[in-house]
Image (cartoon, rainbow, N blue to C red; front, side, top):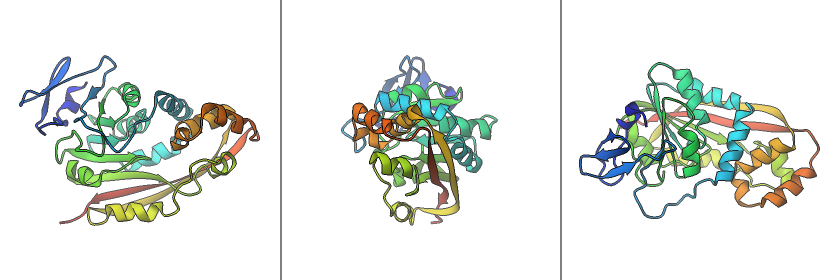
Length: 276
């Protein structure tokens, strides 16, 4: 756990800042948190959450697919609009997007990746030497100090709007990546996968209205050529993996033409805290 990232963290129980006392983190009230041997720290505040973390199989599928470079244009678009030395990725997954941002911003930039999945946190802890991985429930108070974050990322992940507004610096920015209804449409149709809500863009705007103002919006679209293993990975890393067994997915993939051209269609939106 890098010291620069620890200075951005807050105790999930009392909200006080955390200090490093390897192999633990502790706050002035005496709450202590062990840094796992895998490099992440759990700052769960206790109680049940609204969101179930990705399984180890889903995280492995995401790591394989993102390592192939097929989502690199999306990562580049995210990194292009990020700025500032303190980066927070909420729903960090494998840490690929956070690592790309830190490499692009450069300098002394440090990142915190938050995910409720321990399997994801284990991957994210190894994603970049200037990134720290934290297990926490994004629907509760984020274990991050108020007003310390320059860029917050929400890439295909849920958004706790009040908490994102709290942790962002007054000049900070929120970068949100959402799929359009054309994203992976060939697989959605052929494999009967979970569909993107056609009103997703409007719902995003409604959820942020009054708290954030949009300053930029970029469409990222292209096609990629996928073989059977690629298809299994891209499906296995997303929400459809929760609704179809591996055997069912394998049978459906076998029936697809090989290779198959698949559409990538996402929107990268940038927001700033609304003027009060």
